[in-house]
View 1 (tube, chains in turn orange, red):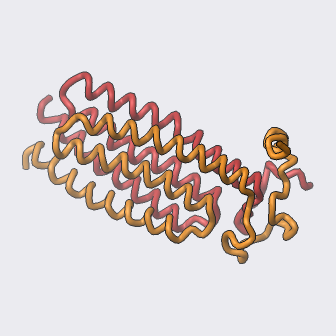
View 2: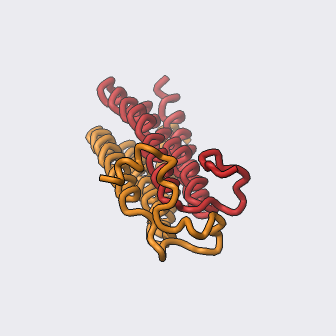
Length: 126
Length: 110
């Protein structure tokens, strides 16, 4: 088996594995159970997509795919930062996530200990 | 030398996609948002970074190689920042730790 043939086969196998990872991440976005879980799965989705694009770039030989991968990484980073900011301002809603592993104090449901993050607490007062 | 580069690239692609699968398994198996953040940010970044390095090895010209390596560096810089921001925001608004957590260094309670 030649080296080029080995590369072809390994890219094919990698595309199958990356497809499985992609599907698993998409179902994690759907399942949740909480909003940060979904955002984390979206971040992971972007990472898997970058790997996917790089593998397709090896397969087809188009070097333009590298630029697309870098741009997708930038967009994914900005989206995650914006979503984290959104989680911070929204707080934690009542029906968000399972209650069976809820072992923090029960009065800590909606925006509890924001005072220990002092700059965050100041941002909330505005 | 011309025989070695495709083999290295193929191995890197295989290992990178394996790490992406491990990251997804961690995303499903781990108990809370903070531990899932470990799996997604570290292992996911390693997976896609390895596939990008494979593309850098496979591409013959210097322009594509340097762009792919710049993408890897950029991704290694931004992924921890995004994961840290998300975990910090989740902790600040009170998403609970898993029952199996042994310590919480950010908590002010004794």
